[in-house]
Length: 372
Image 1 (tube, rainbow, N blue to C red):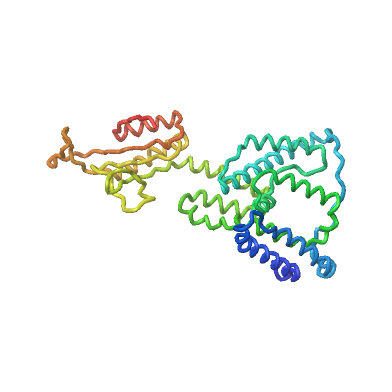
Image 2: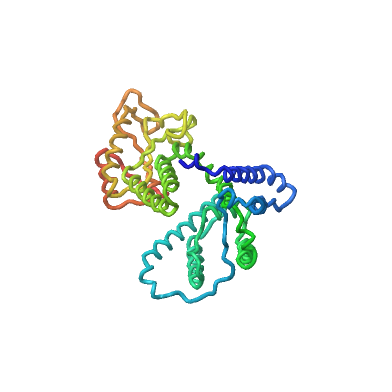
């Protein structure tokens, strides 16, 4: 572990930066926002303090703390891309384009869900494509989305794309004139800003108990993706997450999910037994099962076997009901009153339909099709 070899001065600066940002953003800014629409820019203040502190104490030479160091000045001249390199770059270009697009859409959906709006993935694809085309005339990295930078913007109170104008102007000023002023800034100060901005994402670990109750597959995906991203790189973690999600989808398709329903005391609605307590069995010995998922060749056999198991457990002695609705207590017949709800069956192929007919034939069920 690197803890015994840690730079004490860097640890102290980081501790101060984290404390300064946490107190400012969690306690001071909420108070300020009640009286002013403009919050205090604690990130900017921390950067200024860091530059002054680093310059006065010369932390890079005295304490061997990493700093931003040299920032190239001047605006690069645009030029046509070198087409001769295209055959060598095509494989990498495809993978980079896919990863950039996935990052943009994933982060867009993440913040859209958090703030209650929607994004159009197609529109994002067009925007990203045009941006990549124009940026190809300059010596820049492929355009995309970064979790840390997006989180910093979101934590700073950014609401619209209009902020990019101010950001671009500020970056242009830094590139042309202010670059040397930022060179003494300790890198640990920038790390503090990123960590505090990602605090809300780190706290998503609190969702694990809920995921465990709702879906074991989602719980496994969350843990595997988180661990793989931490232990490797973001790109490799994204690839692993894509593979894991595909595997979980395939596995869930293999095992059909049946849910047994009960009713309340007033017999007005039906609820799943696994999600509600104090439910009663449906009157007259009927059983209500809901099949959740598509029915196709991969799970058709399992569908019949599972349905056979559930029906065999629900086999009861039921009294005969006369035509006038009265119950004849003297006559008892053995029958199965099974209701299979297939409203969640998103699609069914030919083998799935044959399995459904087979189940009806084996169990003597009648198929009643109703519009959803």
